[in-house]
Length: 186
Image 1 (cartoon, rainbow, N blue to C red):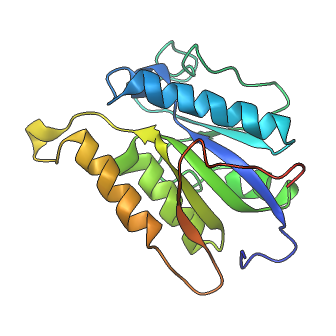
Image 2 (image 1 turned 45 degrees about the horizontal axis):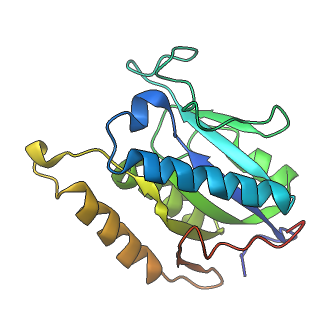
């Protein structure tokens, strides 16, 4: 029910599932396997998969840390959006990529839950997109030594509040990897 005109399609957004981002992430292997399953589901349904990669001093473009994890393979036909900020829309090509694909609804997965995933969800919602978070396909590092809750609590809290996110003319919520059912060509 997106507020974006003439945007009936859905896309899977894979945010920052890069070697240097998820190297020590909570339940890394399980989350990466779920992201891989989502990518396969999207491809089978001919739903666009849009990849996002973050760059900064620790994640230099082209470095092993910047690369996607080896368990995930991006098709050359699938868009890649490079970013410098938490919100995948901020100063990137994401909006134009989604407009070209006539996408008004996003299914979001990736890392870090409490940074880029959360920022991207809010950025999408504020821009008029429907935004669904895949509850078991996002993760974060343990930042408890800096006062953050343990990763499992960060993930659970994000799932809880995103499941109840509301705004006029848009939908939000969470689903598990198993529950994601892309409609062919959607």
